[in-house]
Length: 494
Image (cartoon, rainbow, N blue to C red; front, side, top):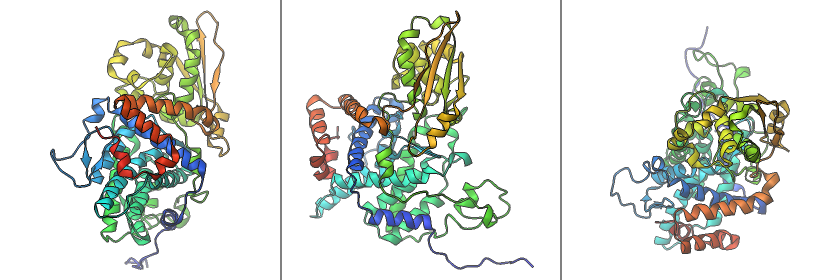
């Protein structure tokens, strides 16, 4: 006879949750490379956020939900006059830093942008720093922000190494929510039980589908989805600190847990057998590996799988710019992930659709010799029908070595090659770029360019004297680390 009841023995918290909680409570960041990379990630992410403020489709989302709201010790949104509660501030900061898809990236079985977590980190840290000073206590320092960034990168990135959420239709911002929840709760002073509770609620939440990143539904939600995730993380951390109980078996509960419901494709009418249940794989302990190996978008505001294709196209531009009408075909040789995510044919409906199209991001630099955020906008696209005409002559093929080395831990390449064939039988050389300029293998070359990119982005929002003050501070690691968070954020208020 089958059982007619549930065995109501409350389990211990799932092991993955315990590992994350213990990591944020006990780990001490002592890697100079991780801290220096975090500093560059901070300035690059803030710079991308400032640049995004040029776009009304982004700025329409910003500000308080109720106009005129006053928030004591409210968190600031860089480049704006807004002072908001930390939940909405996390949303706004997360929105602006992700809008142009122009800062850091992590590529593994799952993809994502660990800098998205800065929305929660800065919002919480700015608010708490102001609150502490008002109470006569020491402020939070920027070193604590950098430490939190290393931890958030690590949680999101290690969970992504061997766990493909996209293959079950879930968006990678679930990992942003989980990582931001852990570090936000830690900053807010949560104990182990409270962090575990907050993490359990992050996993039990309804999770975002990836459909807004893919044809035929790609759209601008992908530019604010991470802000939404960081905002939810701050809210869940706050709920846990108020004493809300957690859900210990949120991942492993048969039939009702995350693994059965969302991570394993099966018949939902019955629970999975233990041997059928798919669980997370954590191939290494949490440390500072992800921050040390994170990828930067330095040259192009483009989905990362296309960065090297755009670089190759810029190289070929002088050879093809005067022969566009003579092109027979363009062959893009790439890796499997790029084909699955961003290879598109047919009409592109909006800017968000275009900046996730491999063919578009190759065609523009072939024709114009550059690729900027403005190249995705409707007005530019409509004025240049030659872009789509060239897209129609493109072939995308996979190189199995590129696919294999994309996943190899000692390589993590993001390779693309571009070759142009003309109607008269002539052709260009095949230009292959296996590691983008923002890769760890090109870090020395890339950081000087990243700092120049930061200077340019600052200048889009602030007068010269303010730009110089911010730049001087951010390029002085000891001075930056010792600075109070709220004083740092003061510099970015309009």
